[in-house]
Length: 201
Image (cartoon, rainbow, N blue to C red; front, side, top):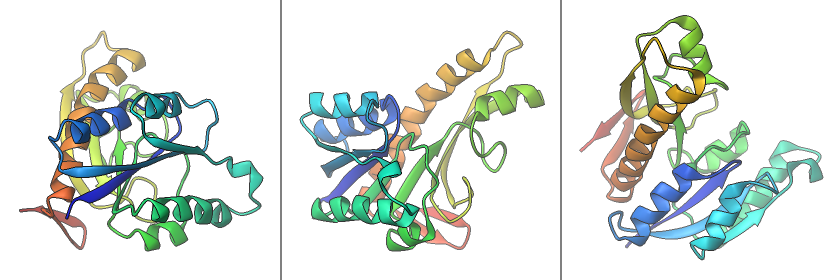
């Protein structure tokens, strides 16, 4: 039976669209679920409409506790029979409640070679540190910040002329590749988490 993939987004949604288009094209054998954003003006919501996907805006400030906000998100995800949650540029730290409920079923994409440069502004962190290579990582989400078991990584070279924007653009192209591949592997049942390691069969 095909798995259903849903998305948490806060921004423009290019990673979400990359995965969704692969599903629509049949390159990832899965069903599209729902797109949920905590930002009313997130471009990803418009892109979801273009793809004729269900989408919801859930303002986190309307809830007194983070868990209450996530309970509403969880309700919508469950209504769409979600098997996999893809955090595609979702700019909120998920609570232990949410992570436990969807244990090893939340994939995040991060624009750095974890465990280096977790958190925000990863590309700037990398440039400021003077690294010669940078890249991106897909991982299962745990209760830390960008600290869950790593699924895939991709490296890009850092040039002396690189700016934060140019490095981000190079990394983004690789993000699309490894995120779609990680989702495909999950949907094919080929990812197994053993401690800190993700085994790809």
